[in-house]
Image: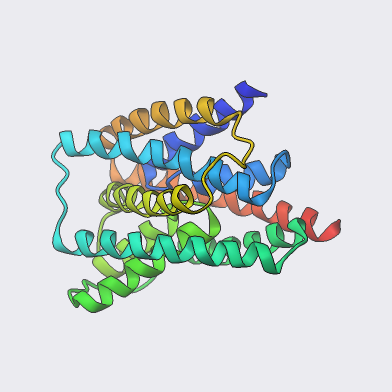
Length: 256
């Protein structure tokens, strides 16, 4: 089983770093499908793995000349705050839905709805927003969604950056990983000071972190070498696969 979790982590984070998906968007639905852990533990496993990926990937991109412009800076700061709020909402969600299967199903439905929107990112109108208040609100929303759904928020970040800031898919992917790094840091910091990690079964986490680090390095290298067209295709295929997995998770969650 350790090899399976390692494989999930490295494959998800290669795609996450390469196309800006983050990795959690793949890890979360697959771990839900396997069903060995409850929602809280899956959230921790996904967030820590994605954070590991985002950290090494961002370092690689900085080495290659990635710079943070004003818009990305505001989005990132807002996503930190949003990540904290998203974690609070997730805890309330767990209290409200005592039935874990129903909770998984609702999360999967929300995810499917957002990913269908993401698939049409290149068909939507393009803007180049400069209003700092609006940018902050967008970043806050991205942080909330990423933390609440335990996915890192990558595909949604990429779609928003393309639509509102007229980024190419390649540049949006790099910026998305940086935003993910900060939003996941916010979430994990809150958990560490409030409940800690000792109450979770994290026996597979070390191998997932190793997978996340390797995936982050490989994905960053591939992002720098592949063209925007190839990255866009990889992004879309990955999103379609996650939608299909999530549809299966909805079916199994409400069938029980």
